[in-house]
Length: 168
Image 1 (cartoon, rainbow, N blue to C red):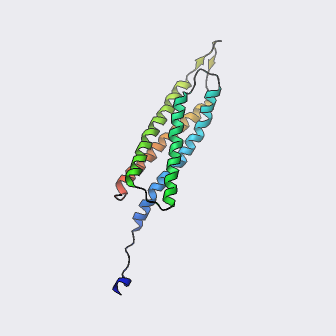
Image 2: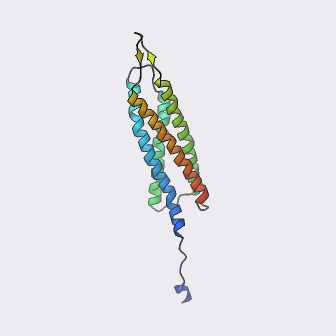
Image 3: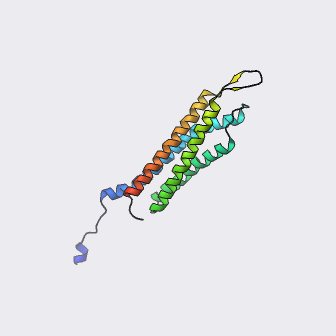
């Protein structure tokens, strides 16, 4: 009889909020990555079609696409797992977030590096200056800003996971 009247201890509201905060970081990272890819697609496709000297290197474009789109898929899987009730291990979250931060730093640096190389005027056979499209160049650097903002989201997630997550 005494056992029936005892209350089961409930987790404080702070702990429940902490569980959902890492998923909130994942959703923010997904949204930022979608903006980055949306801004990146047209400039990269135009530099391959236009017969200019300044071309965006294909291996750089592949690395950027694989990094950003790959982490959209990985983070989406983490969000789906959380919605299905799975518990995501702390070490796995830190590992994926730290690797994501490193890869996004490299991807953002590649975008900025190629943006700087393409931005200069180039001369054709008739001694006319060729400039790349201003709109595409603005889209390219805006994409770099979003990729580097994603780095901040990854670092924030790592900090939050290390500081507030339980030991699992």
